[in-house]
Image 1: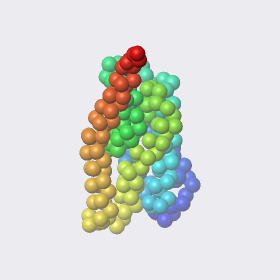
Image 2 (image 1 turned 120 degrees about the vertical axis):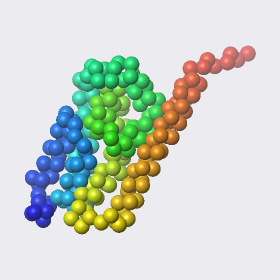
Image 3 (image 1 turned 60 degrees about the horizontal axis):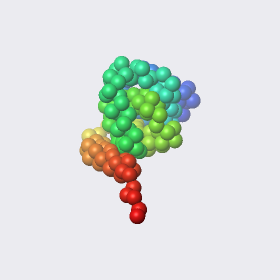
Length: 196
């Protein structure tokens, strides 16, 4: 069955459609990554699913920019959302990259928040592509190895350790990024001393 589906344009379009559905109906994105790896193999499955996620992220961003702010206020509360918005602006690309490395974070939620927070589109796009690559690659590879799965496969262990390190880095990088930007903002707000 796998050989019959591999290289099938219909299968690639199905992956794309399921990724687009995720912009509205949330489900664990890793399931689609693994399925694409199983059907197409890693070499073809990874670029198909990665491209689909970037476009899905842009759709979620558009929803957030034009319609999601009232919904996000209802879900998270206005004050909590404004704190998240402030964190995203103060932390810049570091926060966006780090947030994409958290497997439990709903992929589309980040798009909603960034769109509603008016994150620049170019920054959102490249941080989504770069930040989501490790998790997508790992689960696509897992799916590609399902038929001959071996717990001794070193890539499984190395990839798992890399994701864990990314999560730990998130814990330390985000506070530093926001602290640095806060200090910069304070310096900018300070009046210049008068020259005599």
